[in-house]
Amino acid sequence: MPASAALQGEVQRYSLDFPDTAVRWIAPQYLHVTLVPPWRCLDIAPVCRRISAAASAYSPFTLDFQTVSPGPDKLHPRLFWAAGRASDLLFQLHGELADHFVPEKAEMLPFFLHMTIARLSTAARSRAETSPDVYRKTRTVAWKGMFDRIRLCESELKPSGARYRVLCDASFCGRNPS
Image (cartoon, rainbow, N blue to C red; front, side):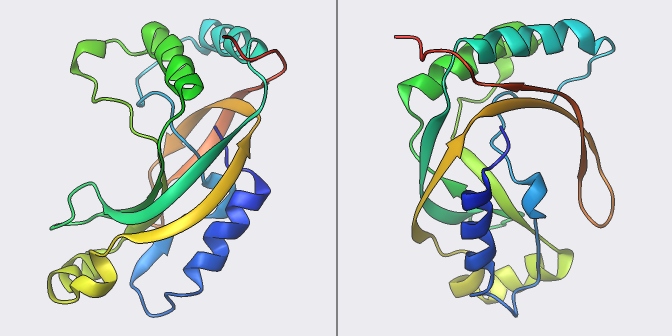
């Protein structure tokens, strides 16, 4: 789910507090919450139909992010992510999509509401060992973001960072299921 303009602005303002940190901030247009982990897919048409059907049952909703912390391992961080407590509604949506799209659901990690906001460079990873204040500290934030759509994206990994190509996009246009 792509981050709203307001949430993108929060991340951009936050990044200004760390001008000397050797991280690569995620471009605002690529900020997102991942509902299901990436998987290989040769035929996207049925996936797009399923995403559209799921989106039609939900109304836009707000998610709260309370912390920014290094991850996934605080001792050897690779990224910074904003995290929050997932609502029952988000767990429901995640479960609905994961049931259809995750081939090895039994091996999938539990859902964790997060949005990657920066990746640490190799240099930053070394600095994280000697500068725990900057690279290992969890910070409190109070970010709210409205989410109004689901996108299926193809990611292309590049040395300068991942690029995403939107394959289909479906707006939340229904009533939230009870």
